[in-house]
Each structure stands twice: as C-alpha cells, then as structure tokens.
Amino acid sequence: MSVLSKIQLEKYADTLIWGLTTARRNAFKKYDNILLRCDLEARELGEIVYRKLVQRKFNVTFNFLSSPALERSFYEFSDDKQRAFLPSWDKELYNNLNGYVFIHAPASLTHLKGIDTKRQSQVAIARKPLFRIRDEREEKGKFSWTLCTYPTEELAKQAKLSVKEYAAQIAKACYLNEPNPAKKWGQIYKDTMQIKKWISGLGIDTIRTESKSMDFEVKLGEQRKFLGVSGHNIPSFEIFTSPDWRGTRGRYFANLPAFRGGNYVEEISLEFKDGRAVKISAKKGGEYVKKIMATDKGASQLGEYSLTDRRFSRIDKFMADTLFDENHGGKHGNCHVAIGNSYTDTYTGNVAKLDKAKKTALGYNDSAVHWDLINTEDKKVTATLKTGKKVTIYEKGQFKY
Image (cartoon, rainbow, N blue to C red; front, side, top):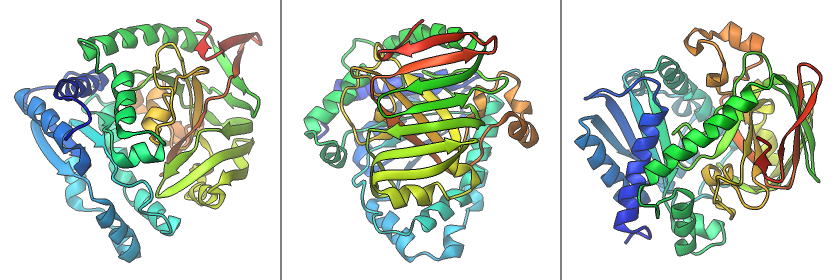
C-alpha cells in the first residue's frame, strides 16, 4: 500500500506532466515518443503517469529499472567488454525520443558497496553518447525530460526518518496537498524567472561564496545565463549556471552527506587552484571521492554552481536523495556545486550551434560525471561585476533581489 494517498499520487503524476511539458522548448505533438522508467517500488505512481500520458495520445515505452540484485550482478560479474557495450537499440531509441520521465524509488542505496569504482566509471563513459544524443535533441527543441522521487523504506532509513515522515516531506516539497500543485509550480516558475533575469543581467565577472567552512570563487564566464525551475526536476527551486571551470579557486565544503554508487560520503572538502581540484578529502568515503574525480579529466573540474532560496523550498530535512538535498531550503537555503559535466543550455546564444570547439573556448566542462555536492551553512554570496563593483546577491538563505 502506498504511503501517498490516491489523490496525492494523481496530483504527483499531473505535476510530472507539467514538468515534462514546461521543460520542452517546442510544444509536444500527438504521438510523440515518451520513455517512462521507474524503479519497481514506484509501480503505482508509474502506472498513473503511464495512463495520463496515453490519454494525451503519446506513444509511451515503459521500463522498470534493474533491481539491486540485478545491478550488483552486472557490476560484479561482467567483464570490460560487457561494461563497454552500448546496445544499438538504445541509440535508436534515444535518437527518436521526444520525452523522458524517470521515477526514482531505490530499494537499496548501498548494494554496490565494495564494487570497484572503475567498473561503474566504465559504464558511465560507455553511456555518455546517449546523453549527448539527448542533449542535442533538447537543444533543438525536440526533447525534454523530468524526474521525481517516490518514498521507499530504504530512503527513509538512510535519512533517519520514518516512511510516513519521508512521504510527508515529499508531499510538502512538491505541493501535493495544494488543490492544484501544477498551478502552484507555475507561480514559482514565474517568481523565479524574475530572479534569473535580475542575476543574469548584472554583468557578473566572478562569484564569491563565504561561510564558516569555505571561501570559494567561480568565474561566471562569457555568454552565460542562470536557469532553474524549468520543469526538469520535481521538486526544483535552485537557480544555477555552468561557470567557466578555469576560473574556480578556493575551498568548497559539502556539509550534507551523500550516497553515490553504493557508497556513503560525508564532509567532502575540495581545494581548487586554476580550475582544478588539487586537494580532495572527506570525513568518510574520501578514497571513493578521489576515484570518482579521477574518472576523466573533467571529473575534477566544475560543471555547475547553484543557489536555492529558502522562501521557495519547503525541504528542511536531509533526504538521502540528491534531488531533494540539492533543493534544501531550511533556515539558510543552500549552495551546491557539481563536479563534472556542464549544462550547455546556460549559454546565451543559439545552443544548437554550440559545437565542441566553442564549448571548450567558453570553458564549459566535459565529463562522464555530474555529482552535486551540497552546503547548507549560513553564507554570504558576493558578485564582482565586470565594472569592478561588488554586489551582495545572496545572504541569510535568500537572494537580495
């Protein structure tokens, strides 16, 4: 039996479809191809989303994701050739996709513990062409995606909450108790649009973030804009950009723990110099962090810088889930960065014409990794404008707009 009510599940499905359609640059058409994937534990929500998509006359492909046992068997017993295998039918599918919905509902967060990190990196690198296809189709307005999290016993246990408490956090964060959650999200979309226009129009050169545990600076880079609340993630309150990785310097500290690839990590500290992490440490899981950041050249460089305003986000607990943790509101909001791949849709020009050489020249990072690291401390964020003027853009958990 679901810990979310039937009404909440219907509203959750409606919100996901709002996200999918809002994130698409060009409007969907009847009989567009949608891929819907979910973990087994989220079957009930997946079935509702499927029904609503079919009712909208989409052609829907539905897949359940591998169980923890299947996933572990693959990583434990496969060889290099199997891990590098990319099915031709996956490429065919991705080349014809118009939308993708993913419902995250893990039965385990630790089932890959002890698996050689190199094996996971091999698979990430092998699947990178699929993400490139997705990105290119999205840049042309032919594709969009959205995702959400469904409450499971494992997530609740790792977050040190009861399943009921965990589900209540999801309902609160996604406005599932509102009469019309999609309408509420539409209002947040409009409100954050004003902040994005303001911050993108300041003419920022560098952004300095200071808290009790860090002093960290990024260079915004040329032809950049800020994005957020686009429909891609449910929930999403963050306002982010992909900076010029070459201008990253200072110490970044993630005070929220994280689960990744079956590993638990805590208190990650990164020291950047000339754009690259030159010192990497963690209170727990430090060796794992170092291995992930050695996946490829871009894995130790910055792909994203983000701020969440506490006035929008109702998330106030650790959720053991990056989707929720990177949108933490609480008392101080949050700042998070991602090591690894950049988001090229932060480019102010025609993204469809942004080739590899141009991306490199603009300082967009390229990697098979994208890992969000979150800081929820009280902080002050100061922008140095291209004119030399300094402006406080974020303080006490909210934008100074």
